[in-house]
Amino acid sequence: MAGRLKIGVLVSGSGSNLQSIIDQIEAGRLRADVRIVISNDPEAYALKRAREHAIPTLVVNHQDYKNREDFDRRMVELLEAYGVELVVMAGFMRILTPIFLRAFPMRIMNIHPALLPSFPGLHTHRKVLAHGVKFSGCTVHFAADGVDTGPIIIQSAVPVYDDDTEETLAARILREEHRIYPQAIQFFAEGRIEIDGRRVRVKSDNADQLPPLHNPPLEGF
Ligand code: GRF
Image (cartoon, rainbow, N blue to C red; front, top):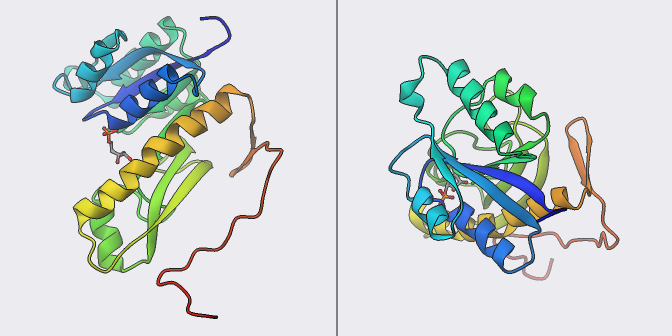
């Protein structure tokens, strides 16, 4: 459909973030079209989710390429062939080289299940619990050199409870991932994102003051 943001979604696993994007598009809240879903893993469940919604899928197995650069060149070629305007990494477990980053400058988004720049990389929830922070959350950011770096678009903070396990915390955060990713893409689709160095501003008519959060809750102070 004309006038809708053309996105390409990169996946490696279960694809629940892909699912939330598809659901929000079908609900009419996210005005985008998923032109292509690409997985580096032929077994990714995300591929099945895409096919169920008649979305074209491709597998680009990184093991078939002799280095990261060749893999990235193929990815860029395919994304361009499908007319992709915004690349959405949704649980895509590969590090991008400058070849990929330069082909889509500030047009690649990633989601990470922590409040960046804290706890980048793998085993996030384990590291969060070991450190004893009282809040964690998730971050949607533009991809840049390095793992989980790049200008931050939106974050959601969730409390960490005393009896949390990696699983309970992951589930609480995943629910928020499914809300903020479609929102970030919709901001982009509406042309409301302004990037100034590391700072991303989303133009908004009702930039209300948000309340502070406390965990444990304050008792009268
Ligand atoms: C999410 O927690 C995402 O933040 C991380 O990997 C997980 C992917 O989940 N990068 P899914 O494949 O979208 O279900």
